[in-house]
Length: 239
Image (cartoon, rainbow, N blue to C red; front, top):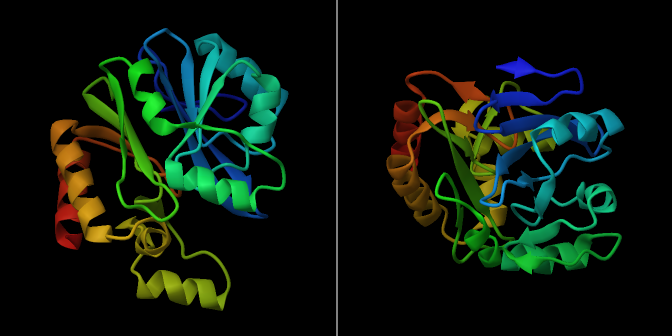
C-alpha cells in the first residue's frame, strides 16, 4: 500500500478507503480509518490528534469530510481539531461512548447516536455497534478490491511489541494482547460486558464481509490472501 507524504495509507484509492497512524498520550499510537458515505462525503473514524494542514490537504483529494466518528469512549481526542476544520460535519459515537466522553473530555463534545450514521452509509460500507458495552465499541468495514477493509477498533490488535511500563506490559502478557495479531483482551475488559459474545458477533460479520485488509486501531495493518482465514481462526480460538 502507498503512503502519502503526510502519512495517509492508501488502502484502496478507487474505493477511497484510507488509514493514518497517529500518536497520542506521548508515544502511544492509534490508527484512523476513512471510507466514503452514500452522498460521496467521507466518514473519518477516530480522527487523528494534532493533525497537520498537509493531512487535511491530502484528504481533500478524496472528498469532503461529512462525518467524524468516535468508535468508542477512548477514541475522541482528535475530535476538537477536526470539528474546527470541518464544522459542518456530523459527529457520531456509541451511546456508552457519549456518556464516557462527557465525563472525561476537557472540552464539551456533542454527538449523535451512532445508530443515526447507518442510513448515511451505502451498501459498500457498514459497522457494528456492540450491544451491552461498557464504554461503547464499534467496528467498521468498507468494500475494496478483493473483499473488505476492516477497522477492528479495539477488538483486534497487531502490536509488534509490548508497550508501556512494567505494570502495563504485565497486563498485556496476562491478557495475551500482544505481540502480533491478537484479540485485544486488555481493551475488551474495559469496553464490553461480554467479550465472548462480542467476538461471536465479529466472527459473524467477518464471515459475511470477508476482510482483504485489516486496519487495527492499534498496530500494523495486515493484508494478504490468508487474512480472512487468519481472522476467522483468531476469533474462533478466543470464543
